[in-house]
Image (tube, rainbow, N blue to C red; front, side, top):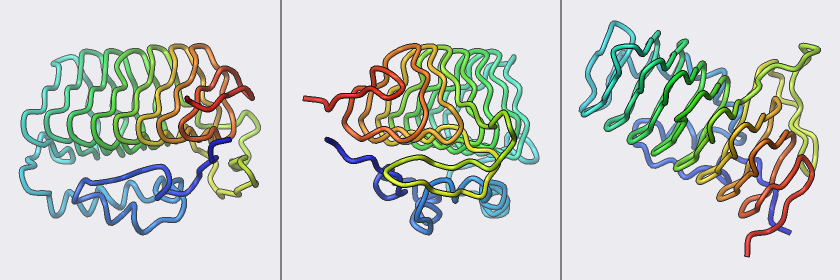
Length: 221
């Protein structure tokens, strides 16, 4: 059985020069979520090379395409060669790496996306971290708040007390979420793992796996 990974170093290979030190400074990825505002403040004071101000609190890289009907509320930084499509809604505290796609009617809030991330159709990504080359299928969402409002516990091979009320999805590099799936608060999907459409996901899923249901997965062969 493949490993159920929860550590930052096991889930992500961050090669973005201006972001890599923040990843390296954490043991678990959810430690980054309350720091996004602070990270953005530092980047806005000292913009990375090649980045310019789109507005007072939004930095964009080279060749970024933003549709006229997209709503971008900062603070935010958008990586080079990224496309923001019509109706996309940024609610602030957003970091997006290069060559990513934020699609029509997708909503983002307090999240961190690495390189070549695709959130292309009717997605909600709040209080989440999406790894390199990860993909959210149409209509899939990251649910980030428990109905009882209690702090979120990550349920893996052991239970991890996060101390946070809001955590959405944490997708390792090359994770692929099927259309219409719901990631319950604190769901972690390992590297190179694919999830069937319409999955109600919770807990920690192993790397290099195919997820067929909430508690059903098989190793990739």
